[in-house]
Image (cartoon, rainbow, N blue to C red; front, side, top):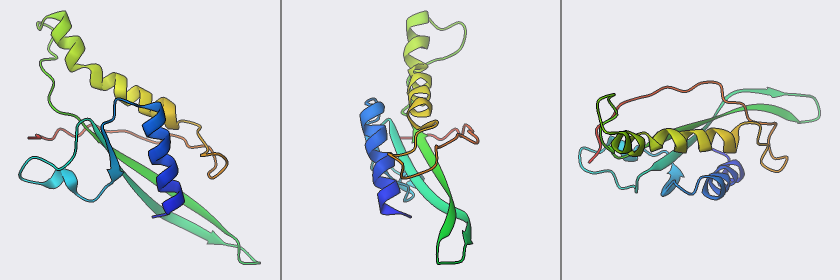
Length: 129
């Protein structure tokens, strides 16, 4: 993982998404049988280099993939029969996810990267503490 890219992503999320209480490298923190050692909501960052091309003169083009794992504590009922205020509180995680998307979509890290583009998202339900 590139330290400079990692620190730039952390700083960007810290500035643009103050709702995140824990931003860190993905090191399996959420795989604990006990309560994970993070504050929620959290964002765990993993950077991979799925492909690299080397050119003459020693330059390289590196395709970096930045994967974020975002986790929240269960916040209440989201079903249609729940009171509106309960649903709004439970669904505020969607606002946080939208802020993360806006913070990183087309962001270039001060010319450190080519502009970032979200290439996918999926929901994974995990029970936390």
